[in-house]
Amino acid sequence: MNYDIKDPNLAAKGNDRIEWAAKSMPVLELIKKRFAAEKPLAGLRLGLCLHVTTETASLCRALKAGGGDVHVCASNPLSSQDDVAAALVKHDQIPVYAIKGEDNETYYKHIRAVLDIKPQITMDDGADLLSTLHSEKPELLKDVIGGTEETTTGVIRLRAMAAEKALKYPVVAVNDAMTKHLFDNRYGTGQSTIDGIIRSTNRLIAGSVFVVAGYGWCGRGVAKRAAGMGAKVIVTEIDPLKALEAIMDGFEVLPLSAASKIGDFFVTVTGNVNVIRPEHFQSMKDGAIVCNSGHFNVELDLEGLEKIAKSKRTVRDFVEEYVLAEGQAIYILGEGRLVNLAAAEGHPSSVMDMSFANQALAAEYIYKNKGGLPLNVFPVPFEIDHEIARLKLDAMGRSIDKLTPEQETYLASWKSGT
Image (cartoon, rainbow, N blue to C red; front, side, top):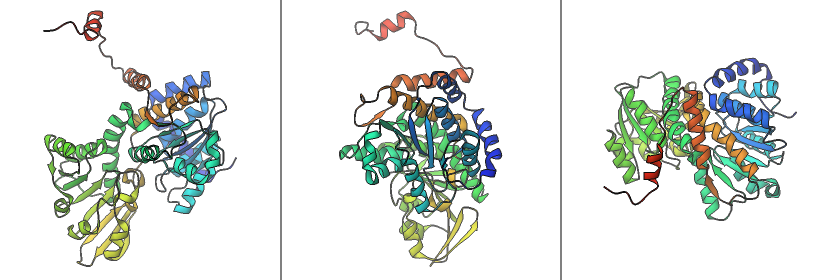
């Protein structure tokens, strides 16, 4: 079996951590048990480009239980957990190509290793596997039934491909499932981003000015958690509707040019490029802490920062100090990569339970409907989304009401009025 990991001897530790996370992933465990009995993915080659974490390991085990031939690489050079990679290789015989801190060349070498299996279904978190397949190995496209995409950034890329008629197979936008973005993006990103900031800096959030760039679901979660820890939160936005929502939620809304002068912490969660630029860095006060929780490190213009800095050094794990000509020090966390995985462990397993349940069931749906899906990016089917929510409520021991026959008739009728 081919693989490329840091150290196979980390497998025992990784296995313990995978089992710990799995205790908070009851929905995926139910799916795994059904998959083991029914084998709905028998003989299917699956190429996964995801963050190699304890939660991802549970997804890999569920897919393999369903009969899938699973191969995994990292979707970010800094997000891999080396002990988890070792456990998947040693305990599950799942080929993994991921080393935390791998350089860009190694990162793409690992992606190509997964593509070498000629995957029939791709699973992405950021669309790097799919885009590399389309651009470098188009001869393999004939083998692909479909794919899934986990994150907002990836869905944006894929919709751009579809608009240009460049997308050559159907993709399920797992990110757009209600049981994904309402929980994973908001509560998962909110908690794990704050966790990454605190682990890497050990700085106090309470009493600080905390700037959140972007008020999508991820931005909402980060802003709420920062406020809950006592920070004064400022939101920056380009969308007037989201800016109004942030104001109604109780946050100050300012242009980044104004917020950059007063912020203590800065987090970007926009999915766009060069959100914080040299002019913003130059106006920041001494000691400002800057990080990104969007998928790619392009949200911070680090090349521009390098040009205006007179010195750069690493002062703590995942903390780099840039001293500018004016004398102030700016601190960048996790090389500008998503701080919740670069400097912490990513989302709590209880929210990833729903996200990865969507991934597993989307793979089954694609396989069952091979050849009959639209050549486009489309949402997780409504029935799957609601079934995952129902299973999650059951696992939490919660029950909800049901419509009475009278209520069903009323909702289906147009004749009843005031």
